[in-house]
Image 1 (tube, rainbow, N blue to C red):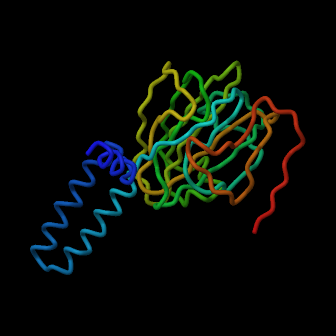
Image 2 (spheres, one colour; image 1 turned 90 degrees about the vertical axis):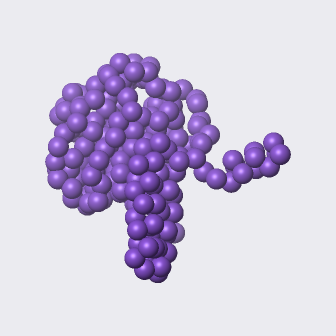
Image 3 (cartoon, rainbow, N blue to C red; image 1 turned 180 degrees about the vertical axis):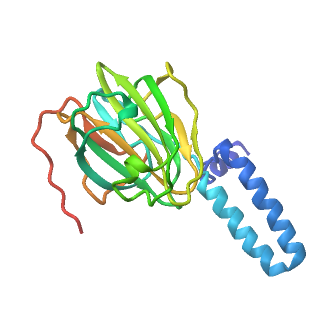
Amino acid sequence: MTDILESMRRIFVPIHKEGYPFILIALFATIVLAWLWSPLGWIGAILTVWVCYFFRDPPRVTPMREGLVISPADGRVNLITTAVPPAELSLPPEPMTRISVFMNVFDCHVNRSPVTGRIEQILYTPGLFLNAELDKASEDNERNALVIETAGTRIGVVQIAGLVARRIVSFVKVGDSLSTGERFGLIRFGSRLDIYVPMSAQVLVGLGQTAVAGETVLADLTANEPARQYRVG
């Protein structure tokens, strides 16, 4: 029996507790729709399964070498550029490398710390709900910005709401210490994360690459190797 239960635990991906209210609402709606007309009940059931899928929170195996910057989000690397970090981060007004990971509605939306360190600052900024893939979303959209100090280096992590995202949820507060890969928040229903690292960091991903939160290495703060080249296709 123990082996059977362990096998079932491995098959079914855990669901984050933030999703429980939405799952209950979807279940209730399914029952009502099925009572009104059985085909509508099937539509509700599909919606309920999707809500469970959206709030999944699978375990991840996180690389732990010092200096690595790990993806805080599941999704596609849609932008690697040089930019001055947002003023609310209170970082020096100098260009940094910005790596953006876009999450669609089918990606896991639990966000994980990219480094081990202490949270120096958290600032929520109201804003618009433009397409999170647009570059200007970094400045115009609703967002939640964190500064994490790690081994003497300060990096920025910005949760950005998207077209259908209407709630950025934070699990942490200023002064908290995070381990690499530790959960720090989520964004409901499509969004993006921007990661700001020093220009000296070696970027280890390419545009269009699929990133996995807590597992994919985005950059190395300590590397001094030549920049890597990537082929799309």
